Image (cartoon, rainbow, N blue to C red; front, side):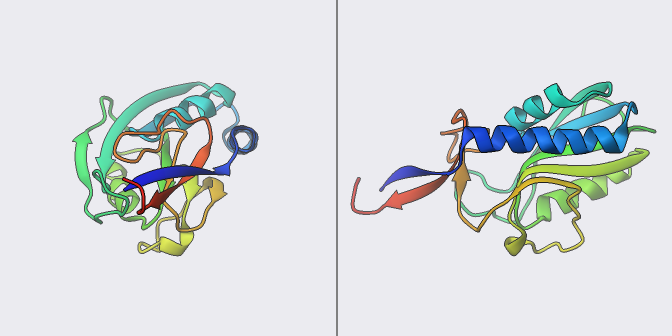
Length: 179
């Protein structure tokens, strides 16, 4: 089975929307230092592009939690990979995620990170699939795009570690007639 990638959001659309979301974050936080927590691996490109547009002092940390493995459907179980390097005590925290669908991973993260003493935790995502949300209490503070329930790649998102480097968001379409 071979796959093809159909463009869902162009590089220009993604760039313009990240700029708009960064402007909103700048208005909301002003000069207050902001601690960005990137959810690896998919969130890296988005966080870097977002951080370049933020005007307040920012610090970075990284965490790895996954529920996909090598498939195209969330397993529903979060798998810890890498924990944070720094404490969160008293920090304004912004979790930066590539995509939110069921909300299970973020529900888990918000619970464990909230116990680490941050002043505040907010959530920013490049892509949101609200129709797939199982954990309804997961509130996304900053969303670049709401998308339909399709498996997407590019801009950090992958299918079995491929397509992360695409400068756009594309939908994986499988061609079962080709091998």
